[in-house]
Length: 508
Image (cartoon, one colour):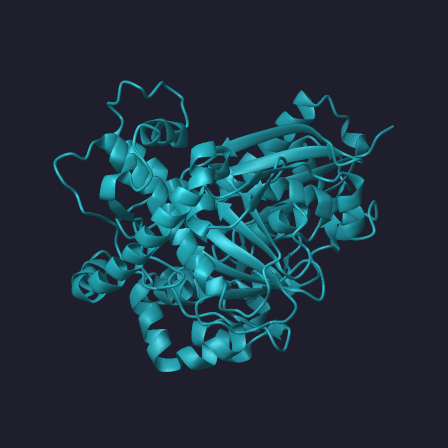
């Protein structure tokens, strides 16, 4: 009888599940969405119960659609985004909605931390202070929700909370520990100095274990919730970006991954942990390598915003059609360069390379001849230029880039994929199978001993890829337009920042 592996990705907007057989062939897949609530314009919150409920339902659906017997499941693993944490009391109950990584309310706390001790934080955590990180979010909570903070006893990053509900174990891996900005990367342990800044005791943080260790076994209650057998092994798991990268074969230095997800990023596998002010440096799931991430807040969420704001009355928007399909179909009727229209996709501030939560988006160069199709094209190109901004930073790291991979939900758009390829100006390899859920399934196989590491697992089922090459005419046009994109962004930044700072503080 075949053995099966379950991979779960508790993403920014939905939980995705995949079941693969022992040859890593996908057997069934499912996705369950959940909301991000915005009680104020700068706020973004999620309910951890949604993560768990969606994960259990997705597993049940995959078991049913794949006609898979629970006894044949050899193990499972979970991935998820960094920074966002479940806020729990001593009994494990949720005290407050999770502050999402896109929440900007902690901008004043982040600025104060940067001024008071930014260099010390960067030296220990290898990342700059920003509202996306757990540390300033906890300071915001302490100052604005003191009753909640006083009752706080445990914090767990997204994937760790779901695994806690499955196994009862308070654990994390070094990737997500680093993502809290409470971990000393060099010491490989929670930082007493950073915990003091946050106002936390060390016992409030989970045990840090290797991603490919077995965390524990599925409890009876969790087994009933997700349709599996009690005692099913559950791996510690790791962050979505690094697990997804490893799942497509980015396990050696020089492999670079461009991801068009809810937010987009450019990730480079490196030999050493090198501190770069504009990047986030994590441990890779493949020792002894490291994983540098340059991240933009824009991605498919930007297309969703554009579709909801400008296109809901468009006759060509069939019910149920994905937003990227609508924007893609409109943009196809424009031309490369969007007839001179530029778009900066800073709808939620920006991370790399600006690290400025007060940045906002804009369209530049509008004239009477521009139509909706040109605006749609400019949005696709603006996100591509934001990725190029991240890629330019990666190029300064000194590590030779040997191969470029393009992944993420946005990469399903052929037009957008080609725009990104032309904007980057390099050959891209697009794997046919790619997701953090798939990478998590492989990790589960390694944790349970089915495979002897990532290289061994990836030999079992080499992934087919589609190669994209830049079109010369578009590449040169985008080279010029990218220079204008950067110049305008930097020119506007100092003039509009004060008003934005004021509006953010008023929104608390």
